[in-house]
Image (cartoon, rainbow, N blue to C red; front, side, top):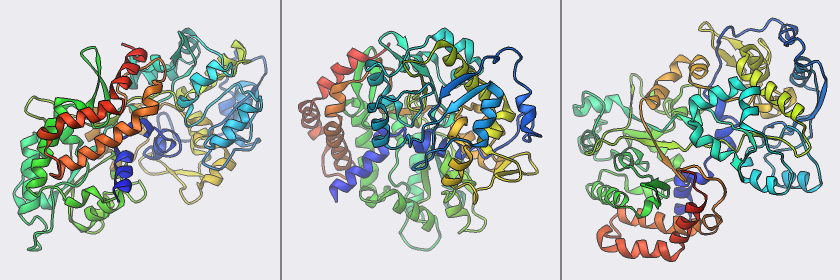
Length: 536
């Protein structure tokens, strides 16, 4: 049970593996973007798109080997209409390897067999690109090439992330290696809290909490004042996610920060110790569901739906009405007349307020270039990626497909994808969605492509500061010691986390021995390794 428990906790807290395709490119990146119009949501003909080609710019036809971003287990075959559209508009001939970029086995075999490509993308290139650069598989580019040939693309990236954060990530050995990729869900949106308004009304809370004291008061009343009105003592204020509380201390568990010019591990800071002591106090008072230690995420959500907990913290995407199995409908559909109150992170005694958010990462879905790719081909690829960002009609055709077939437009001008038709097999067959159109949409397009009913939870997230977790600073390379020792360190930290909160370990009396166990597991070597690769 303990092993399963730690695995569950690591899945929630270990940010080093959180940038998976689910968020980066295979659904969540665009799942909340259910469509909309910037100029118009309709395209009359593909010929009109082709006619927009700048005269003279693409006179020379180029042949490009183009690895596309496919759906899981569904490589994209050549000959899709989207491929033909790109070929006609940009005067290129695309050779598309039938490759599943999510299969590590296929990915490894492809490169080990001596293959190359001009346009290279996958769901996890952050893991490979430095190694590929060392092996001569990739070629470098320049920052000037990026901003000259993809100005619209880079403008959106800069709107989402400070260049001081993203440029070091794509820089290795003093050279730039790819077109950075991010989206607003990865770069700007943090987790939010929702509370049941009927519970607030029943216990006499007129407005959402703004301070940690307000938050504590709500937890107390949701636990002790029979907020569901059933006459039984069977409710709790909190379950398993505490980032609103962590945000008042400024540290997220199992994370590495650059504080005052020194890399520190969050799990060994005084702030973290005080956080654990506070949560231990709340647990002892009965405000936290004691089963949070063993409950899975599904069980937590079941308790939310059943009315056992009155507040839930999650990503805004999970609260959006258009998200399948969303956590809002779990309550609103079951309890007629119920409302949810979304509120941003609360302020602590020292004025800090933040909620968990993903540290901006730009390498996993970035576009890279093969070692033999000429400058001319690099520039053409950049031009294509830039046009998909700049030209709304082109993006709609490549991402959503054809009106009346794979999407329709509602009365608000919002694009409504045909979800029954758009299986992963059909997406790969048509070459739409992320196949060619994985693009860094910013806040403006996000709001114009999201159902109005979905906006409230996102707007709450936009109001607050993210509390980053994981490795919270840019690096110029991998910390090999961290790769070797981080799992043991995280395991020790997670175990102390649960024991401290549930009262099995007195935080103050056990703190020194706990920190010693971290150091014995290699923490100091890990910190030294980060000092060698950090970019300040």
